[in-house]
Length: 181
Image 1 (cartoon, rainbow, N blue to C red):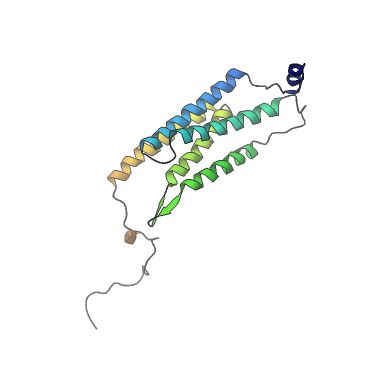
Image 2: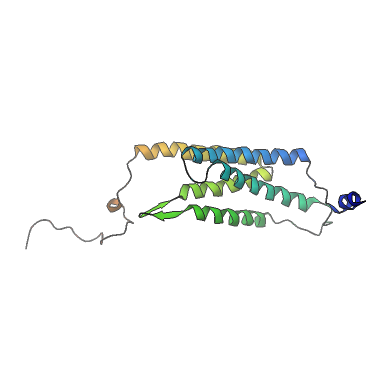
C-alpha cells in the first residue's frame, strides 16, 4: 500500500537513468582531471574537492532539468537557466574564497580558487548534457595549468620595485644623481 502511494507521488523524471549516469560520470571524470593537477602540485583543494564540486554542480543541473520536465508541475513552471548558473556560482564562490589567503605579503590560493570555480562550471556543462563544452574546458584548463606553469619557470618574476602598480615611494620622484648642490 505504502509503495503505491510513494510511486504515485514521486515525480517520474524525463531523463533516463543512463543519461543521468553518463552526465554524472562525465562530471566526475572532468573534476578528477582538474583535481589531479592540483593534487599533484600539493595544493589544499585537490582531487576529491574538485570531483565533489564538479559532481555537485552536475547534480544540480540534472535536477533542474528533470524537475522542469516532469508532469508534477503540469507546465506551471518555467526554468530560468541563469538562476541555476547563479546558484552554482554563488556556492562555489564561497568555497573558492576560502582558499584565498594573504600570507607574508603574498596572495596565495588564487589558482586553486579559480580551479574550484571552473570545476563548478564544468559540472554544470556536464549536467546539462553539454559534454563537448565540459571536455574542451577541462582540456583547456590542463593546458593553462601545465603550459603556463612552464612559462612561469622560464620568465623571471618582476620584483616589487619593478612593478608600476607596486606600493611604495612615489615613482615619479627623481633619484639622487650623487651630486650635491
